[in-house]
Length: 118
View 1 (cartoon, one colour):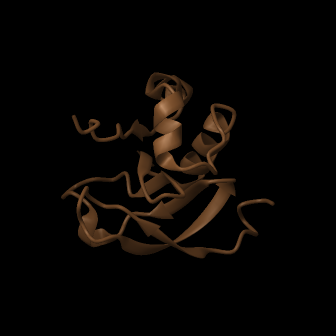
View 2 (spheres, rainbow, N blue to C red):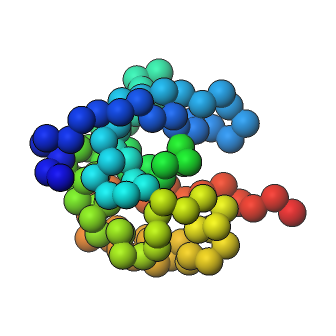
View 3 (cartoon, rainbow, N blue to C red):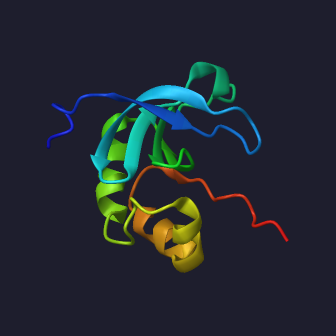
């Protein structure tokens, strides 16, 4: 389905580790991947990259200035793994560098995941 005709759904994001999740309106341009605008109260002062590409678990993958760039990025990483799986499963068998490399051609900023607990 074309993103211009996709209906927005309520999506729960994880803004910070151990913080209460936040609800946003998002579209799902690829199965398991969501694009949404970061809530104003969660943006850092002066951050122009207000659009997020995130996993269905609520974790953020990358940030962008434009919605279209975030949607393009979802298409550029769709082949890396089955994004509909749980985040822990993806972390266990998917190299973050593969994701970073796939996003290199995009105007976004890759958001690395928090370090694993020891």
